[in-house]
Structure formats: C-alpha cells, structure tokens
Image (cartoon, rainbow, N blue to C red; front, side, top):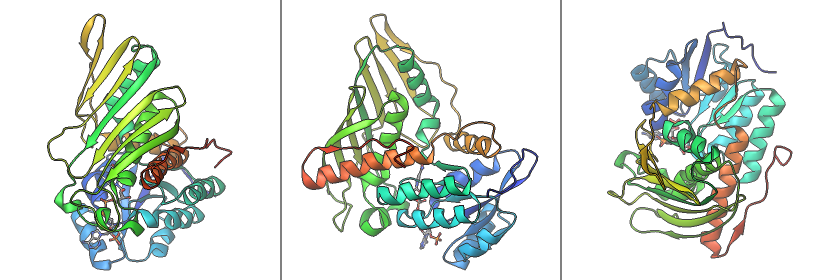
Length: 347
Ligand code: NDP
C-alpha cells in the first residue's frame, strides 16, 4: 500500500544515490515544490552521504538503503545511481511503499524495466521516469504545433545531440558496460523519449552504426548515428556523441506543409529557440522558458497528490529503453531491428 498522500501532508524525499544529477539539478527541483523537501540521502559510502547532505542541507545521511526506506519521514524516492542498480532499488523501494522517480535508462534490459513498472503498480505507488526534455518549453511548443497541423504530415525528424561529455562525468559512462555505459543508453534514450513525445507516435524499427573514437573503452561506443521509423511514417535521423565540442544541439521536424527548427534544445537548461518555416516565411515561436527538472518534479508531485499525470511514466521509460536497446543491437549486428509494441498490458 502506498503511504498517505494528501495535499496537506509535508512529504519527504529520499535520494538513492549521491550523484551529480541529484546535486546539480534534482535537490533544487524537489525543494522548489511546496510541501516537499529532500529529507535523506543514501550513498554506499557514509562519508559521501554526509558530505552530500551537508552541502545540500539534507537532514539525514544513510549508507544503508534499508535504513533510508525504513525512515518514516521518507515517502518518495529519487533514484539516480548508476544504471545497473535502478532495477533492484526500484523493486525494494516499491515494496517499502515509496513513490518512485527513477532515472533513465530505467534498466539494462527490457525485462527488468517491465518488472519495475509492474512492481510499482502492484505496490500502488506512483512511478515516473526522469526524461527531462519533454518538460522543456521548446519541445512542448513543437509537440503542440505538430498536433495542430502546423507542418502538415510529419515526414522527417533530425536530432542533433552530439555533445562533449564534461570532464567530471568522464567515468562509468565511458568504461563500464556492466553499469550501462555508452552514449546510446545515455543520450539516444532521451532522443527516443523526446521524439515519441513530440510526434505522438511510437518507434517501430531502427538501423544504426556506432563509433568508438577517443573516449569510450571496454567495447562501449562514444558516438552513434541511427535512423528510426515511427508508426506514423516519420523517419528520424539521430546523431549522438560524447566526443564533439562544437556542434551545438538541435532538433528539426519536416512535414509536407512546413518545418520546425529547434535550436539549442537538447540540453538540461531552459534555453533554445523554435522557428516555424512555411510558405509564409519564418516565425519565431514565443516561448516561456522554465526549469525542466522543476517542471518534471512538479508533475510527479501532482501525481502523488492525485492532481494530474506524471510527465513521463514508467511505461514511457520502458519504451525509450526498448528503442535505445534496438539501436544498440542494430549497431552490434549491422541489421535492422524491429521494436515490438509495448502497451500497458505488455508491461
Ligand atoms: P554520478 O557518476 O555522478 O553518480 C552515480 C553514482 O556514482 C552515485 O550514486 C555514487 O554512488 C557514485 N559516485 C559519485 N561520486 C563518487 C565518487 N567520488 N567516488 C565513488 N563513487 C561515486 O552519475 P550521474 O549523476 O551522472 O548519473 C546518475 C544517473 O542519472 C544515471 O542513471 C544517469 O543516466 C542519470 N542522469 C540523468 C540525467 C537527466 O537529465 N535525466 C542527467 C544525468 C544523469 P553512491 O550513491 O553509492 O555514493
């Protein structure tokens, strides 16, 4: 059974993982929500937990996950450990009756990701996947414009997400396959979620080629180009990398009546611009930028208080993972990979 979640309850969050994303974005995003605060942090190292807690002003620091989950002041957990740990930690948290916001990729394989969603359903707790890009004003505007017919029938999408992995993140992503390293599980999984969200359609097949240029080791890739076919007929071209310093990011949607150009939009920051180009010329779309993580956590809190849906569900996380894993396999085997349909019954 889930814990009591009335709007008047002050709700405590437990961080599972003393991670960079928690430190740089999520503590602030959680503490920004009325009636919510970060109550505790768990790390495998007590020293790291205490240092993290002290810097972030978090009341409790644990080196035992069981102890954090036994804390009656923790009703919600945010899981941002390395990827191979998400599965077991979600199962344990759900069994303890905690609502779960989990980082992407949900898991290293589809079966584990599906189990995570089922475990949360069974426990009656809210589960969401922290796909931040769908919270951006830029992507939301493009989704609305496509839905309103602004570009006509979408035919093509192009994703420019080749970036430089900053030095402080040049760790497990580059040399730990067992932790779910590599650019595809890190970045392509976000592209897939963003395209699914914006096109309101599902990826059905992929081809791809990956690259190991200079940073990745142990058989991992640090660059990839892939082509994805969506159920609505759109072909999407993805370019993702850890190794490129000066490309800039973007996303484009090209339809039979117009094109949308999103510049500097594949980012954690509330920035970027969207241009609609059609027979009438170019229009800069007016945007009200807001913090992507604050918005995502706000939706999560709404769901906990039964006021609305989460931004990206557990099933969304399963689907983005399925598509990213298909790219991994397409690159490994050099063959086209079909992505099965994953409706809620399939999960
Ligand atoms: P980090 O490498 O910063 O943290 C991951 C784990 O590494 C931590 O849980 C921590 O273990 C361990 N760790 C951290 N610092 C040290 C250290 N000095 N020595 C030894 N171990 C250490 O990962 P990220 O924050 O980059 O990513 C975490 C998760 O979040 C991943 O699943 C990633 O895919 C996702 N992510 C999502 C983003 C988004 O926008 N949605 C953006 C960035 C990442 P312990 O907890 O035991 O201390």
